[in-house]
Length: 85
Image (cartoon, rainbow, N blue to C red; front, side, top):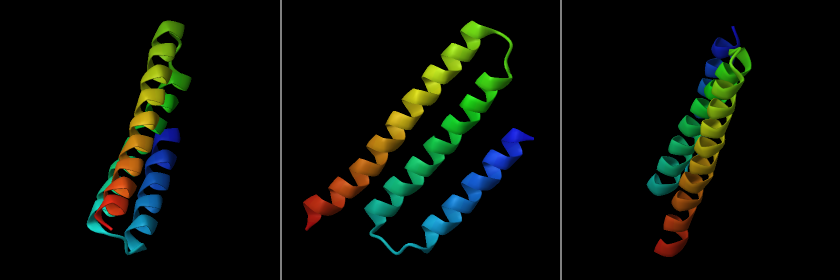
């Protein structure tokens, strides 16, 4: 049930992001960031559902790495636009 809510929320956020008229580089960075954040949310949900503490820690660490990658993707899209101007 949690996964369904997370996927629905991610889809809603991506549809809102699609309304924003940015540059192609910004849009690509935003889309990549949204996908990575949705995947991180799914990993966190799996970590919450597992009974194995080591596996939960590994999933939480992977989720943290994905969130960092999402931030980097978003920053890269913004930097591309800034450098082009």
